[in-house]
Image (cartoon, rainbow, N blue to C red; front, top):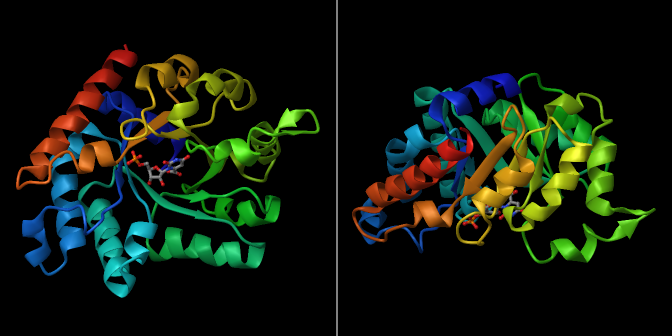
Amino acid sequence: MTNRELTEQIRKKRSFLCIGLDTDLDKIPGHLKQEEDPLFSFNKAIIDATHEYCVAYKPNIAFYEAYGLAGWKALEKTIEYLNEHHPDIFTIADAKRGDIGNTATRYAKAFFEQLNFDSVTVAPYMGRDSVEPFLQFPGKHAILLALTSNQGAFDFQTTAYEGKALYERVLETASAYEHSERLMYVVGATKAEYLQDIRKIVPGSFLLVPGVGAQGGSLQEVCKYGMTEEVGLLVNSTRAIIYASEGTDFAEAAAAKAKELRDQMAKELL
Ligand SMILES: O=C(O)c1cc(=O)[nH]c(=O)n1[C@@H]1O[C@H](COP(=O)(O)O)[C@@H](O)[C@H]1O
């Protein structure tokens, strides 16, 4: 999916919501655990109930790898279900990969060819040759960690390096990579005040902004400092939506939460 197609979806749905699918057997409703594939049953119910309110889904791969082969199968079924029933929805494999070029190419093939995701999250620490293999696939995107939502972001990312914070250096350097038009960047919603300066470095790029909901980030602040004329934002919320209820009404409760956020987003798009 191209950036333009993504922006069209955002305008059409009046939403730039990304719903995380961090599916945890300890948190899903008890009655689903009797099912043959509880992880997929949960995801399918969440997708069926929420797809009209969002433009992206982001399964975090850790939640599937944690269950071995059964988890990987559930991930495969989830991306197949999304691609078959909702081809207009942008899909993000949140895998935070990063390795030498030869290995990075295999990661890219795994997520873009084997699983057919639209994008994958990538850590920038190993530099150009670890990122560019993800940028060789037309219509696919690498979403590079720039300034993350967690407290540990202050350990390295905001530290000055040759007069600039490391996250600024990441944005500047990566903007010069081959096919950098296929790059998006992660900026945590909990650090919305940094967005004004970030927009000076990457004025037109899409930003994936996690941290609204359970981590306490403000949607309004993110929009105030980060939104562009083409919107340029995918705001993610996971636990606050998918675990809105532990009962048999979990999907309806998730839909209500997703709609609430979508309605707030629609106001920001006016
Ligand atoms: O890359 C990410 O998606 C990510 C980056 C970041 O800086 N912070 C962050 O929370 N995430 C992911 O976004 C999701 C946030 O989930 P909630 O806190 O439940 O909304 C998790 O899957 C995190 O791994």
